[in-house]
Image (tube, rainbow, N blue to C red; front, side):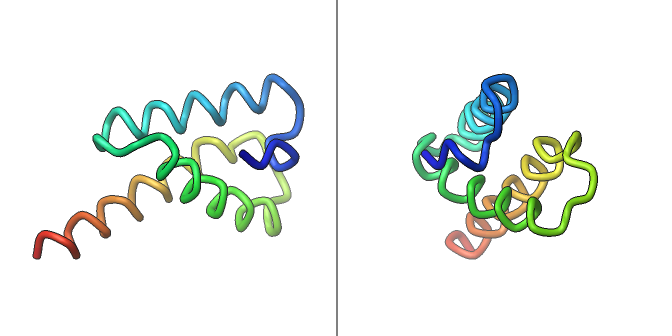
Length: 75
């Protein structure tokens, strides 16, 4: 887990909660979701001016990525 990108402990807990929720919702292992989440969060952090909504944006992007992966594998 790339702790440095999560910032402080409060932010870390928010991001870990998002990862857990996504994994549960998509039926994917948390380790897989965490890799995608960390990648998307890193991308967002490079361009974000306001960081308050990063967990929400990262969650949305990861869900979209995993949804597309599932469709590609099943279709």
